[in-house]
Image 1: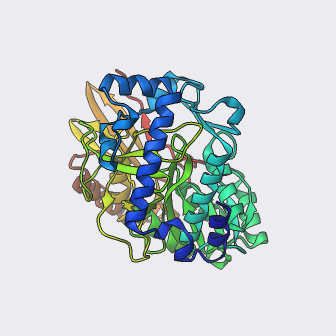
Image 2: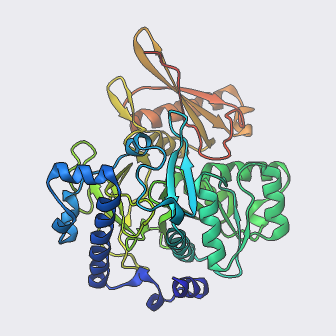
Image 3: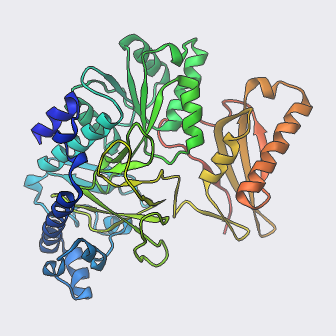
Length: 443
């Protein structure tokens, strides 16, 4: 692992990192690791062993990568039901890190790492950052939250292993974030895309133009965002914006990341095996078909995840990337199967709303969806911030903007929703993941 970190931190030459492994060699490695991780989970995780027993299979039945489809799925509810340590495959004496994410019951989803797991995590983040064009000598500010959330410490360890200087600001304190970006000559930013939008706005209020800073790259994740949002961010800041993907249940940030060709996210599949399945039936789908992303950890020791249903909707992109990496790519994740809204019988995703809004000039990339119920019928209102100039303009101009937004939403969503234009900064800014939907419906 040390050799990988050192080579990536210098120039990430194709011959020295796993991203360029010949396909036959990569598939052999995946099969070897799949057999080992299935055996480990079967031996040490009671839930997984009982589910395999129900299916009448043993680790010896895994003879090819195609046999992965015979294995049982793991779901987020499994982590809640076995809280806190029921899915661990390593004794606590070998666990060096515990992370978690909040659960609906108030108990966190607990994930664990051995030292080898932490080393793997650092190595994939080195590869992710290198793919974004970052290297030793960069100054990387990390505004993901530190603590139980995996974002902050995950990115921190990877940036340090890359050889970059790390500015661990964590989330919040926008004025301080901007001051340090300016004073320290920060060249790359890691945070959620919506928080970076907030920083752009606040910087302008402080008289700081992001375009005048040395900042050249942003590595954004932890929430779905659209290409329209990317274009807006890049226009307002003159940086190159990269999408990074991960989830705590698998390892944290670093499961996959865009390269500079921005043609999908490369999955570091020597450690995380991707599948796409039908969200309803669980049946495997071929490359190029949109469905739910399912991930299997191939090297995780403390808490292996076998066929974990992420609920993220994407596809495995056919063909190879111009960068030369042999790693498969997934399409940008703009929605989740569990964030779908059903309004008067029509399926609506927040990402569709964002796409429609950002195509209309005069709006800001801040919106909120308010759901209510009147006389037994669901009502959806989209509150959209507009630029100060537009809001202070003539009533006719506002009405024209309203009509354009109404038309765009009608076209994209296929149903009529209400549009409300609100002043800039009237929608609460988030330090982490943006809260897009407020549901005030009563059952």
